[in-house]
Image 1 (cartoon, rainbow, N blue to C red):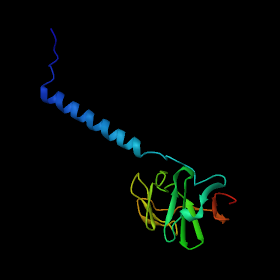
Image 2 (image 1 turned 90 degrees about the vertical axis):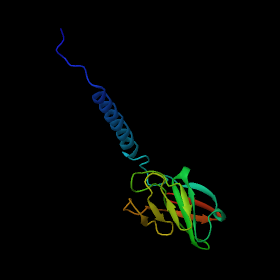
Image 3 (image 1 turned 45 degrees about the vertical axis):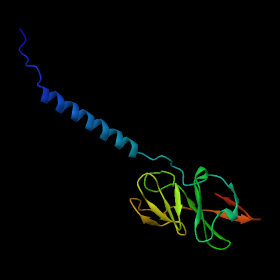
Image 4 (image 1 turned 135 degrees about the horizontal axis):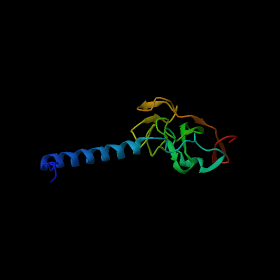
Length: 142
């Protein structure tokens, strides 16, 4: 003869609901944890192509090369790492003078690299960039 009392329907449902919540929360935290990309931009000089692709007064994002290039004034270029300083995601868009991170919404000024909106608190690191013969090169020693 068993002395255990079978679990009631309410107890079983509460347990299932709690297990589901813990699973969802754990998955969400795993997605936010750790850096997705640890590099501060290109590790060697990379050819970015035509300088005319970078609009004056805005910027162009080169996601594959992890670099953001702006042209604040005609013929003057600035470059920054396109790796967000918050959690290491690569920036995904530029609107006017603001570049955005898709992971947590951080935004950066494309002319200075400074944080416009957090959660990031550190600016984007500067990257060397040169223009020669209408072509852009970015990275160390560019």
